[in-house]
Image (cartoon, rainbow, N blue to C red; front, side):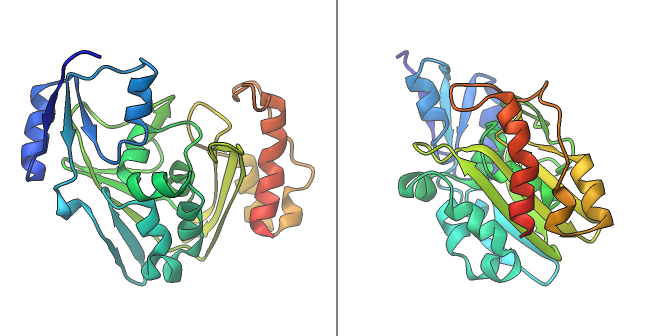
Length: 261
């Protein structure tokens, strides 16, 4: 492993300055994705910019309209939050099902979204709940944030500071987990929001995406039976040692039906 620098900024402004000054540096949030990538030889950053000292990026705020989660808030904190459980219980359940206790106590929501792993759970919640991703520069809508495999709308050096989730009328998340990692082979988040029904999928494609045919069906009838008979094309879906693209396509309406039930 080549030598690298380590920075522990004491403010968001300092972190942003460090990131802007070194395009090969990597932001370190929980480290649950970046460190395994380094072990596999997939990543060799020039420096770490560790956000652990930035208390301003932690915490959960909730009211009747929205729940705002700081970017450095751990999955375990979201899962255990009384505010999240009261306002969006499906989000707390999703967080409780991520990885194992170590991952949940180290991994962060901001790190997960910035990484955009194709099988991560949070991207489905962000899309289905029509969340807003706030950064040190701007507010990014969920639609359009996930661009592809490990690719997002974040600009170089841009840092996620918080995620704001509007409180839905109803919402549920069901995933078919890979038994060892608990990543989603397919995960489906269904939400009935103030702007309509939204159905988001993770684990099936290069990044999280919405399924219009299911949204249209559920807009007509918001019930499990509305998912029956819907088939999806598999051409753009993932195939790996765990599941074929065809199997993933089959799972999407099945898991949507289970989420509604």
